[in-house]
Length: 491
DNA sequence: GAGTTTGAAACT
DNA sequence: CAGTTTCAAACTC
Image (cartoon, rainbow, N blue to C red; front, top):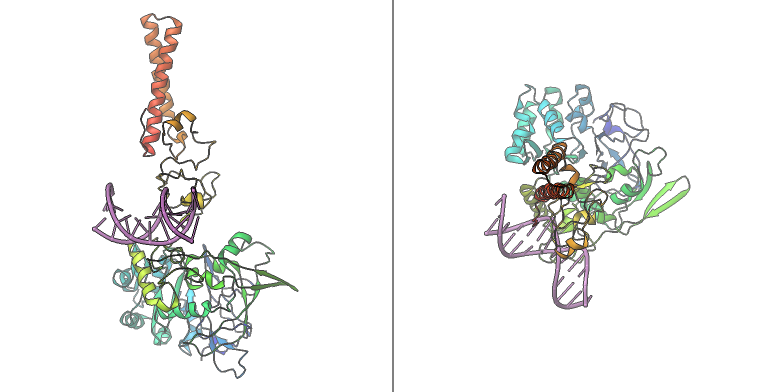
């Protein structure tokens, strides 16, 4: 039995065996930086790792040995420590092996996982690079593997090469699913198949009685690291019905922090709709605060909710309380769903990434990663994804007739132009009027003035010639603006 | 609520 | 990669 397995944690939440609960260390990050430390005290070792925007969760497994059904004992082993290949960290799991139902979701970038797993090889060979595996086992995104499913054979190969002192850790087959959404957190699974784990997680959390905060709540109201934030340590009463596949449950109170729900991938694991209309109790001292999360139900009829047409599916959520028909986006069709996810990722590795990035452009809050392609809406209706997201169109957009731009920067559409139905560009013309353009324009005007003087024209005529030349220059500038915006323009 | 419009996603 | 079709949401009446 490992040291950690000897720890007994008591919570007040119904958490069926194999289910997932994110935790925050009650006193901040553990002392080992990214890892769960070798805590030997009776205090629970809740882990939360932050690396960039990623957060690590510990996934706990109840040890069904408590005779009191309302109180569970959980054991946890630090597989993350093992993954990061620090010999001293192996000690936790070395003695007792790997608890058979242990599962961890671990947050690292693909590259980090690649390096980490590579480092497991005793000979340092690259054969354990996720990159090499992912060519046939998972998905690729450019040169970076972003998903990996280790088959039992590959797991065995991996185990063979693991240093002796850690080899017994992997007596139980290991599956690693990393960075499925490219840039999202990494999930490390043990024992269960990759399909089973999300299923069990989602089954647990889909139970109607589960109450958890939704992403939007946190993102709208709270800064995860804001000092004194009310949500920094939320006490939540969470209860869930045990799914059929689980036999153990218990009452647990979990400390949650908002950032646990910010990643897209987590929405896959913790479907937002599972918390829809459900009450969450947040206590601060003696106060209790309730909130609800409403999710827009989809109405899909033909896509089986397994294509990106379906908002729920596109958001990494399960359908719940939707009006869809023939829906496969639920826990009863996990296999079909996972196939559909894979198909989407094959088509577009970034399919499940948020469309609205956080990158700021000037005063614009964010930007659409792909840009819109609107043609008839002027980007002033909710058909336009930029407009719907309440952001300006940018040069990334390929829209036609865009009006969703900063009028202080861009040109306005005059009534005359309205009559001729001239499309306006989405990008700021200032970027086109470079110093070279200005100098060239001035050169043309000077040349025209010199020509007028040389020809002996009167001042009024010379002025007219110069103005006409200026008009020509402006026409050229405007043409270049519209050309850069891929907009048809007839002057 | 039915029908139309729209643009993203999917397909060819 | 461009053109077309499919799809579901947004919109209009």
